[in-house]
Image 1 (cartoon, rainbow, N blue to C red):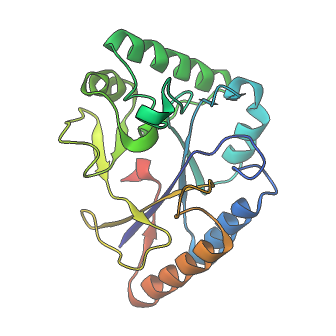
Image 2: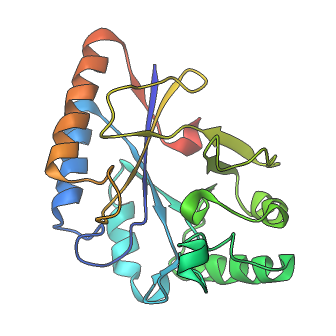
Image 3: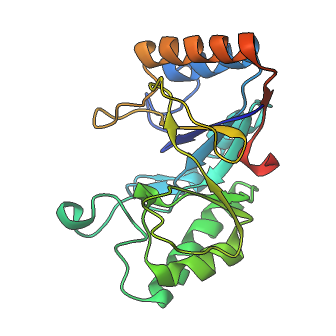
Length: 221
């Protein structure tokens, strides 16, 4: 049975994916115990405060771990009107030209740290339909949500699945166990705190006791 674990919103801020953060210790322990691999969805300039170009040391540290895949998750991960759009950056766009300009900013930041991500997830899961083609042309796969994708057809590979690490009702998605989580944030339930780590570890123990599991990155599906 194939197993993937994706984590959103990592950025170089204390508690959000830095070396020494408690959440990163949990990931290391799960890799040691179960061989779990993690696809990390990273905004390239989170909230316009954390451009990757100024934090290459952090990207290099993540890449030194063979159980991390790095994937793209927007540029700013914020909108012009949070009340209306939350942090759905690519839903808060009026034209395809704006979308392409934002993608260019994003790819430039990733290029500055000498990494080209293969995967994409919309910040906040949503995007305008006219953003689908330029994003599909930029990335090899898009990790999307059944409901929030709203029937849009990506020309790159589409990967569905969004079971939370805190959930016990686990489903197969095209013969793959696909878990989605957030690294931190008090507005999320499926973050990497102690309780969720222990719950997810229990789920993995049950799965591994009853099935042969193959941990994979999303890019390996």
